[in-house]
Amino acid sequence: MTEQPTELPNRQTPFSEPFKRFICEDWAPYPAELPQPLPATAWTAARREAIAAQFPGERLVIPAGAFKVRSNDTDFRYRAHSAFVHLTGLGGDREPDAVLIIEPGGEAALYFKPRAPRTDPEFYADARYGEMWVGQRESLDEMSALTGLRVVPIDGLYAALAAGVPDVPLRIVRDANETLTARVDALRTASEVDVAAATSRDNELTIALSELRLVKDAFELDELREACRMTAVGFEAVVADLPEAVRRGRGERWVEGVFGLHARHQGNAVGYDTIAAGADHATTLHWIRNDGELRPGDLLLLDAGVEAESLYTADITRTLPVSGTYSPAQRKVYQAVLEAQAAGLAAAKPGATFSDVHKAAIAVIARKLEEWGILPVTAEESLDPTTGGQHRRWMVHGTSHHLGIDVHDCAQARNENYREGTLRPGMVITVEPGLYFKSTDLLVPEELRGIGVRIEDDIAITSDGCEILSSHLPRDPDEVEAWIADIWSR
Ligand SMILES: [Mn+2]
Image (cartoon, rainbow, N blue to C red; front, side):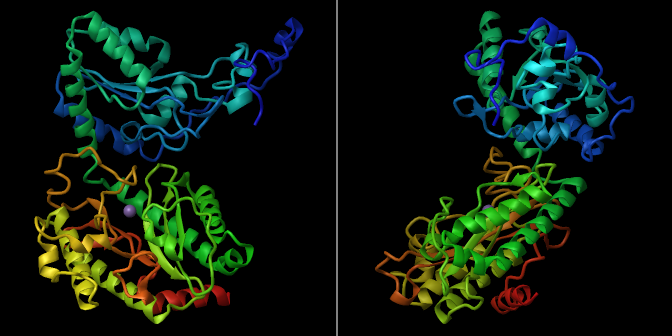
């Protein structure tokens, strides 16, 4: 990484006056043609209208968010707030500090910092925005062509916000840009607006924006299909490299790296930190340290998803035999989880509730645990939500979550629309039961200790059932073994 001259004067060589004149000269003009609209641009106006209709006569402020510091003077790779992405279509690493404002009449404007001309020191001396440092940024017209939005210079943002307070009701997505939220609260305080009450109105906007994404439009479904397809490519590459992962040592890291390579190559990135868990590590639900070995005879639980450039992500888990075949004990657990998933998938249809999917899957899990003599009570007693729950020792997580721009999409939706909500065509959820027998669990027969299995697919609810978006990857254990053998024979 190169040093940043504007922020680190102790390391900066001052620019001479001749240099400042010279650096401005003899650059080719900016392109005369405007860029094509982003793929999402045809869809975002309808989304903005839908949210505006819920808050008529109000000003809605949806910031992209600022850079977040990773350490010292280096930031994390930029990723905008999901509500901003949904309403502007700006994906990839766009667009730090921008703010979308939907005015009381419903018209929207994107507040954006356009590129400065090459005569401006920004060109060579600004590590955050300068063309020499981050590449050529858009002009106002170019950003407008990309997004279909009216685009105005960000310099006017605070004046635009202040102009309406307190007469025009204003709501802001509070967690997107803390600095901006503090400025808005300061404006409110100065105008004697009750900040506590305003905060609770802000939170209603956040909930509404989360619920706006519960049902996906056709563009979003296509992006999620594509994310699943790209994720399958990553899984295939991991399988092809399993022998290498064993040979190299720290096989979990090798797997994470191979998947990450394909995520970056095909899409924007991974949609969440890859879980690459060998053997007993698979019983740690969010195992992302990934510093373990992969050994012949062990299972690899790989929970990973490619995030497309549009930022829609897949979320798929397969539990694979490192040597290519499941042992009888591994297969027994795997088959039980597969049966639980099949029950969950069968329950996933319009009119059912979100929690019906979990109930169907977890009933199979409890019954298997009873069959195997592990459960200290009957399956029926265990499934009683008030007095039971013992089976949860071996599957403590839920079976599903919504999926979209966020891996846990729509997380601010109200309970009645989420867990108790009714499944509708266009909703996209995961179905991911598991069984996790820790090596330290003395209640479990020895042959099952250290085995963790999860099978996770992404589905879209259709008019009469569901479409498995992640069907590229086999789930049946025989098919998984055949698939691995096929990849290794190439
Ligand atoms: Mn998941």
